[in-house]
Length: 66
Image (cartoon, rainbow, N blue to C red; front, side, top):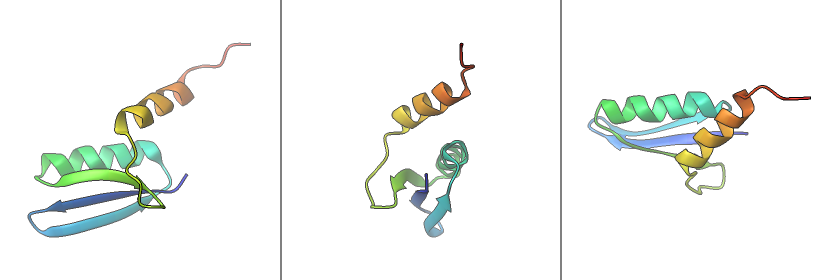
């Protein structure tokens, strides 16, 4: 899954490509702490719901039962 972290802030716009949703969420949180307005988009430019992304990541981390 290729996703894009976009942000606008004090030193201008930022656009970061990532294949790791967990990394993208961390980037968004970091950018917000340093004063940026940040969000995650798919490669088509549609904003991704961060709560749904967190839930999907948590589901992937859960141990599978036989």
